[in-house]
Image 1: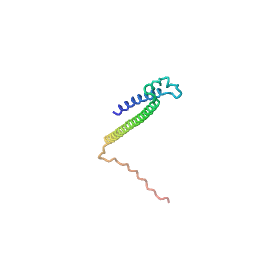
Image 2 (image 1 turned 90 degrees about the vertical axis):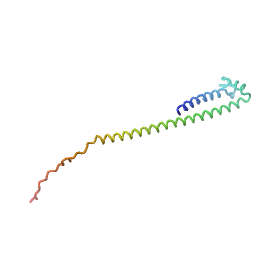
Image 3 (image 1 turned 90 degrees about the horizontal axis):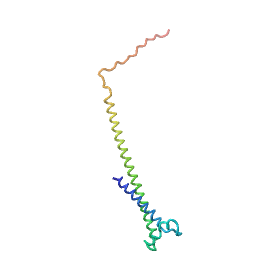
Image 4 (image 1 turned 180 degrees about the horizontal axis):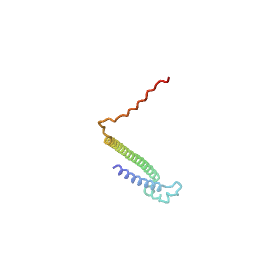
Length: 135
């Protein structure tokens, strides 16, 4: 479920970033030249009136804050998703390891030889000859 929200957030981030680029390119250049005039900065004056510079500056700031905030939230969501996957993987490995240890212990008990009724004969060391004191 979180994967869907992350994918939608990334799509929205791309749209916001393209809008931010468009707004920056539409702004009037300080020296009345450059990319601002190449991409129709005169259109913004006719659309927003004489206060176009203030409107565009404010819109740029709002769009940038939206872009940065969305990028940070997506970063946190992706980190949370990866950490929850890691926890699930670790718990899965812990469960598998516990099951394997239990299975090995069960097999070891089943494969162990059963005790016999007769005790094995112990070897008795041969008696040493008595030594006589040297005279």
